[in-house]
Image 1 (cartoon, helix red, strand yellow):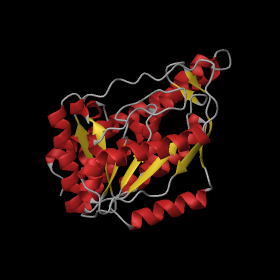
Image 2 (cartoon, rainbow, N blue to C red; image 1 turned 90 degrees about the vertical axis):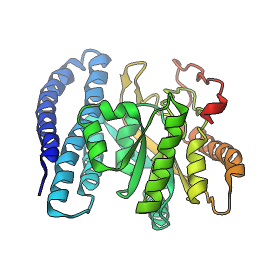
Image 3 (cartoon, rainbow, N blue to C red; image 1 turned 120 degrees about the horizontal axis):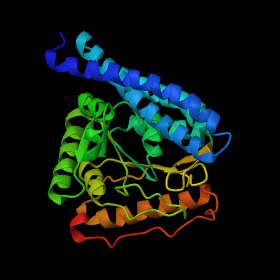
Length: 310
């Protein structure tokens, strides 16, 4: 039986669907305008990102409530969100995922790592587009570390809270961030699920094929639970989608899934070396699969790390 508390997300889902219908009409108008200027195309595909995330989240709310009502835990919401993203990415965003090394190798790595669950999926973080890419890659049994601001985003925040698979992190307060990591570790042990994280901690918007320094907290989590790390590297897509320069041309997006990095036998004393070596292999892969920096490239601003952030 669905409680009164669960009714509110249904109305949210219906509102999201009405918003999606409005977005479809806006898309048509912007598509016509994009023949004159590239800016409408950027706006069009930027709204496409919102449509994928909000529409998928709205459907996720409905499917999650339906699963609760019938007493099943098949994670249909995740299955739908993945299919929804993969279907709309090439059609709305003009982006097609291309696995470096071949789709079969990528699938084999994902499947073999899932068989060893739990594990830590680590992906580089360039822009808002990564949230769409994430939904296409992430397995069902997985907890996601999210910045706490996402909890307040309409529809997306509702689904994240309702699913029970999101741990919100306050990046501005060190003690809260540590508590969030501890909560994620507890969920991993109790539910035997994986974790999906962005080790850079924030979007880089990089245009020079670089990575921000990695936060060590997620590596403490991996070592503490003795979980293998599966690095996922998306190429620098500055020519495909650059939110700061109003570019959203789309195209083939290369993704390289690296070999799992074991943590068995490691201790907290090994965390710094593990973070550095993981960053090195991911940076090497990023530079190998990415094109040259564009003319508008600017050096990546890297803040000096503070001890409390480590």
